Length: 322
Image 1 (cartoon, helix red, strand yellow):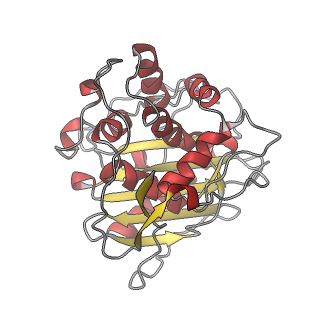
Image 2 (cartoon, rainbow, N blue to C red):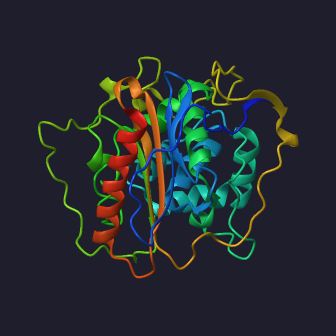
């Protein structure tokens, strides 16, 4: 089947990189994309590969939903906890049923993700060892917003708009965008290399009045609320449909999916270093896509890493949206 695909966006020539302060020893890749002007407004190491950690759960969800015509109640519940509280068990269930690394190969072809690759062949069960880049994550959000079937985009983004503060493993996932950017927002976070037990178990905090919690009221009217996605019935179509990009500053082309060659698996990026990622949609009518991927020095603590990533996310956001 031939689908119109959007080639990986490249920074607009008029948009020079900003100068957020990268902490010593930290490696960062980031992209800010303005959906109103269709331009990349801030970037650094946009195509550098990072270990995906839980950010790959967005691709797992897309692949699952677009491969079937209906969804059983049990899987709707698994999608909810995978996307809202980053549940690893739910991700492993979809990963195993979807063919593990074949999920990434399918998504890389369909979304034309040039830097995304499956985990190494000797680690097929490690979905968090998927390789991806800040630009590919930004492309994935654009797909959900502009090209995916509204039922698919609506369900996934609807859950990300309700991302919980506490991950199912007890880690506080309100670092980066949730702490640095005024809400509402839709976010998918990722972390790996900080152990299985958080230094302090997360306790949900009441948001201050000046920082609104994410809500569906900020979402574009055309995007479905998750509750409108019905469970398994024969007449619920989920297959993605072709769409046409209106972006004027990125290269659009029609490419047969079979001709898009995904990046090959290689060494796991930054293995031995903890990674911390914050990604999502921010601003009025979700105008900006912000993606910040970071790798920290071996032995870095959770508290230090989240503080550094939050500060950097604030600087990247201000630089890219000012």
